[in-house]
Length: 246
Image 1 (cartoon, rainbow, N blue to C red):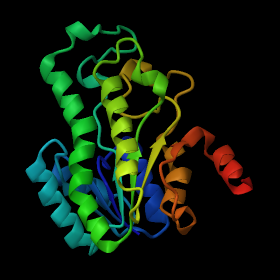
Image 2: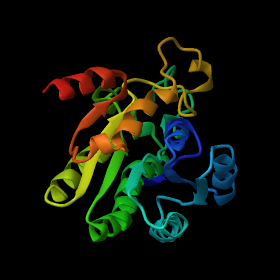
Image 3: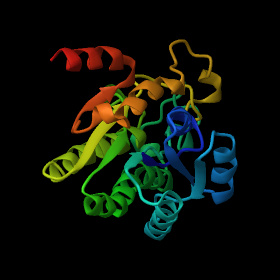
């Protein structure tokens, strides 16, 4: 598979890129900095490449798409993962939740434009290529429903709730095509750069590698035709067993 992963320079995106590289997929990861994306890609197995793409900016998305298509010779799978967490608006959001009316407007807009508008912009540029090829897959990374409505989680919660609703509509709009859309989430708080430094040793945090098994499956021949599913990484083995039994 030829796979584009947005936000692949750290956290869940980096973990997924590493896992998929082990399966010999061709991968492009993106980050806001072209230099940073290239440096991170160089730490992963070949043939992972890194390119700059600001998912908030339509021109940057379009240019990044063109580079990814040129690098890979096409795109089979889009993994929408680029995102900002609560730390960008409240560095101590676990210990000191901030009410929504105190959230800076600029911070609110940046999170929404990255986590929601970014999914829309990247998918809008990639889907015509997938439709022209007659097939393709989109995997949109999301999170637990409880976090979407958690106290003190504006704007992160609403941004991910919006992205999940967007994903469901994407799936409905593409239902009669060869393009498949699915949701993937860790199933709990993960030890990534989105977690405050003082909470990094908090019990129960999941490793980013929790995403490896389900994303590898979603990019495999076995997942051909799977559509509009919401897969929780911590429950993946049980979900797959039920699916196989059914």
